[in-house]
Structure formats: C-alpha cells, structure tokens
Amino acid sequence: MIPGRFAGRVAVITGGASGIGLAIARRFVAEGGHVVANDIAPERVAELQAELGASGLAVVGDVTREEDVALLFETALERFGAVDASFHVAGANRGGYIARMVEADWDFTVDLCLKGVMFAMKHAAQAMMKTGKGAMVNIASLNAHVPMHAGAAYSAAKAGVEMLTKNGALELTPGGIRVNAILPGLVQTPLTKRLFDNPDVHAAFMERIPQGRAAQPEEIAAPALFLASDDASYVSGASLLVDGAWAVSGYPDMRPWRN
Ligand SMILES: NC(=O)c1ccc[n+]([C@@H]2O[C@H](COP(=O)([O-])OP(=O)(O)OC[C@H]3O[C@@H](n4cnc5c(N)ncnc54)[C@H](O)[C@@H]3O)[C@@H](O)[C@H]2O)c1
Image 1 (cartoon, rainbow, N blue to C red):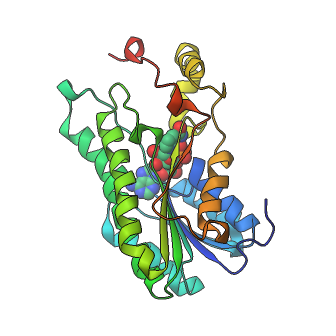
Image 2 (cartoon, rainbow, N blue to C red):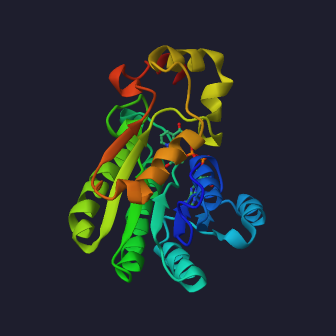
C-alpha cells in the first residue's frame, strides 16, 4: 500500500466487481483515487457500489457491447472529469477442443476477452486524449504464451490481447498514453474455483508452479497499479508475467480431466 499514490486520479475498470478487477478497485481507492467500474453481474455491481460509496461508481455493462463501453467512459468523464488509468480486466473462458469447437463458445470467449479489450482501449484512448496523458493496463494471461488443452479460443484471444497492447503502445505512446499488459498465472478467484475444488487438478497445477501456490488477486492488482503509476513512466508496450515462475516450467497435461 502506498498512501496517496493515486490521490486525485480516476481509474476505469472493466469487470471490476470480482476477482482481479475488484482487487484493483479496492487498492486504487485505498491509495486515494476514484474508480468507475462496470460488470455484467448486477448483484455484484450493487455490492461494489455499496463498498465504494463516494469513492466511485459501479455500473452494469457488457464489454462486448460498444455502447456499454462508451457509456462507461462517458460516465467517468461526467462524474470525475478525466480518466487517468484504465484497467481492462473482464474475461472468462468457454473451453472446447479445436476438433469439436462450438462456434458459439468460440464467439463468447473471443468476443469477451479480445473484442471487449479492444472496445475498452478505443474509448479509454478517446478519454485520455482529452488530457494527453494516461495509462492502460490490459489483463491478458500466461495462456497468451502457453497453450492449454481445450483452451484454443481463450489462449488465442489472450495472445491477441498481448498484440493489441503492443499496437496500442505504438499508436498511443506518442500522445502521452502508456499501454501495458499483465499476464497472470493461476489466480484464486471465482473464475478458477473449479480448479481449486478438484484436488487432483489442483495438485497437477501446484506441481508445475515453482512458487508452489496460486496468486491471490491482490498480487495481480499490485503490479497492475505499478504499471498505472508514475513509477512506470517509461514503461509502455510491455508484457509483465505475474505467474510465480510458471512460464518457465510449462502447463500441466489436463487431458485426464477433460472429455
Ligand atoms: N483467475 C486466473 O487464474 C486468471 C489467470 C490469468 C488471467 N486471468 C484473467 O483475469 C481477468 C479477471 O479474471 P478473474 O479471475 O478476476 O475472474 P472473475 O470471474 O473473478 O472476474 C471477472 C469479472 O468479469 C465480469 N464479466 C464477465 N463478462 C463480462 C462482460 N461481458 N462485461 C463486463 N464484465 C464481465 C464477471 O461478472 C466478473 O465479475 C480475466 O480477463 C481473466 O481471463 C485470470
């Protein structure tokens, strides 16, 4: 915790009502900033609004709908006057093997994880161009680099997020807007609950992760906030692995637990 680091600053967060997004929201506010977050889950949005109080706004929205994303950034500008940081976190996975890929599962995953980030970057860019400064942090995944069984759509989308980050840095850094990505390994959130509930699957993951445990969402929020802070003033176009050294040991063979 760095008290006052984000005093007077405003962050937008997509998927801010759970897991990594919620940890980012809590820490940004704890360090003095204001937060405007969206999420597709109305009951979680209501809980987040109650928690944020006057420190922020939580709104229901779907990152795959451009009008919802545009409204999120308009809301931030109207309520707080600027967007200094934007964290693009919303994501989920509908798995499927390539040989049996269901088009609707592919579209769900790629639209949410890739198109949703592109819409957020577009509207974050327009908001930040008003002041000529800002920092975006895209949440990709270790799966941008490492495939997983039945994870083609998710891994391809996350690899796309990494390239969107580089393209964003190329286009926007000259205008004072930094764009970076975080590639988390395994993080204990509602998204990964199934892995933690199955002792065999959990053990297979732990065997591969040199740090011997999953991250807590706060351990992803900390480097995300670093990338949004002035301490990262010369960092743009970077991909930061936050994975307990998992990338250097490889992914477990998930075939025994997939049908
Ligand atoms: N948990 C992990 O191990 C892990 C690892 C690598 C990357 N990630 C990525 O981190 C991000 C956050 O994941 P998490 O683990 O915190 O998951 P989570 O399920 O706890 O939180 C994701 C939030 O996004 C929201 N969301 C889903 N679809 C949305 C949509 N269309 N529009 C707006 N909001 C939507 C959900 O309601 C949820 O509140 C995701 O992009 C995920 O792919 C997670």
